Amino acid sequence: MNTTLAPAAKPVKARHTRWRVFRRSLRKNWDLYLLITPVIAYFLIFEYFPMYGVQIAFKNFIAAKGIWGSQWTGIDHFKRFFESYYFWRLIKNTLGISLYQLLIGFPIPLLLALLINEVGNKHFKRIVQTVTYAPHFLSTVVMVGLIFMFLSPQYGIVNHIIVFFGGKPISFLTEPGWFKTIYVFSGVWQGMGWSSIIYLAALAGIDPTLHEAARVDGANRLQRIWHVNLPGIMPTVVILLILNVGHIMGVGFEKIYLMQNNLNIESSDVISTYVYTRGIVGAQYSFSAAVGLFNSVINFILLVLVNRFAKRVNETSLW
Image (cartoon, rainbow, N blue to C red; front, side):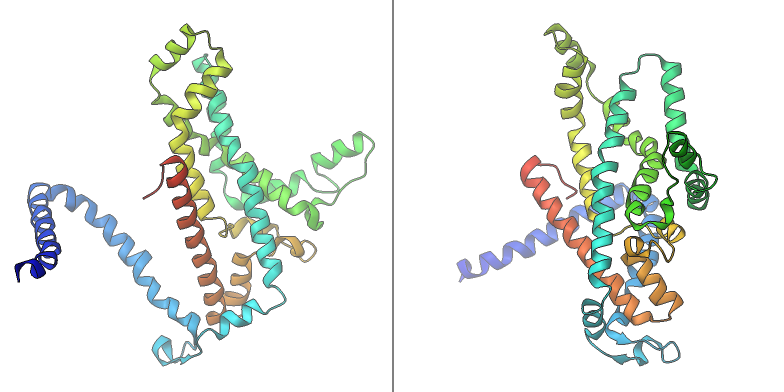
């Protein structure tokens, strides 16, 4: 009799124990829990409660009838998206831009942080940091305006240089083949300084005695970077890589939409712009909600898979 009840009693006892520990911690650290309450409230109100509206992806939503009054359609909107002409083009463009951005944009801030960390002159180091950080504070509209100015076929400085060396002007923003490169490299220029801050903070936490020991062993600067700095910040690199891969289907909307036109739409049409044109402009709320939900689910799956892979390989993960 006792042996049959013992296994069931253990989880109950463990739950009671955890609850007592939590109550004791709540009484002891009530001020800390009070400080975190606004953060929890923010996520509940603005991140979790709006998920209630996701159900319109499975309905034929009509604003006059409301969410509950709209007709249930199941996965019809998802089928429509999967069978549409634009499906593979959207997937190809979204993945193409994201992977291109990850391949080019992820290692450059790391390389920049390693180079800045090796600068001995403090004044020059601050100048370099300020110059590389500054583009981050440009708004997206200003950034796209600069791109149009620099790449203009008639007045752009890039085409003036091409003509100076005997070439012909290129209409960069109307040729689909150039769109991904312009988007990625302009984003790298704008964000590499700001993204390097996390790596610089991680490099500052490396024990200086490791570098001293490496110098005693005869290691040069490059060897110390490879064998001391990189292993020291590798957990940070892995965490940021996981976060980047988790947003691989979430290509930003504003910049792409501002750079998009009828001539380059073959390469610039991504899921986020498609959701906007169908949902906001075309008032197809249920269909656009289904497309956005599909995108979010894929991002979530990628985040979980990459996190699990990183945990097995490097024993570093988000959870």
